[in-house]
Length: 191
Image (cartoon, rainbow, N blue to C red):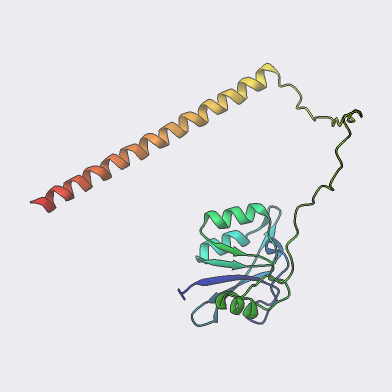
C-alpha cells in the first residue's frame, strides 16, 4: 500500500485511542496518522470562531491524503475534494486506530448509515375524468432593483471581467515563454 497521511477528526484529547467525532466541522481535534507505521504523527487542536472552524485548513495544510470522519457539510467536502483529499465519512463510534485499520485493510469504515435525502411518497395518478388539483406555491421574488443599484452591479461585473482578462493575458504570456523555452530545449537536443 502507498504511504499516506491519514487525518481523523477525533474527540479530545485526540490520538489513536480517541473516538472519531460525529461532525467534522465541530471536531475538537484532528489526529494525523502515518499509514505505513500506523503511528500517530500529530494531534492538532481545531479552533472555532465566529466564521466556523479551521478544520478544513488544517487538513489541507498538513497535506493529508485521506480524511476519516463522522459527517461533514457539502462545503467542507468540496474544499477537501478540490484539495485532493479522499473523504471517508460515517466512522462514528470507532476509535481513530480502529477506523484507520479498517480503511487500510479495505474494510468498510462506515458504522452508521449516512442520512439520505427524503423521498416523496408514491402517488396515484388522477383518473382522466378528474381534474388534477393545482399545486401553486408562491415564488419568492426579489424586490426590483432601482436603476442606480443595477448600474452599480453592472459596473462591478465589468470590473470583474476586466480583471479576469488581465489575469488571462498574464497566463498567456507565461505559457508563451514556457513554450519558447521548450522549443529551445528541443532544438538544442536535435543538435
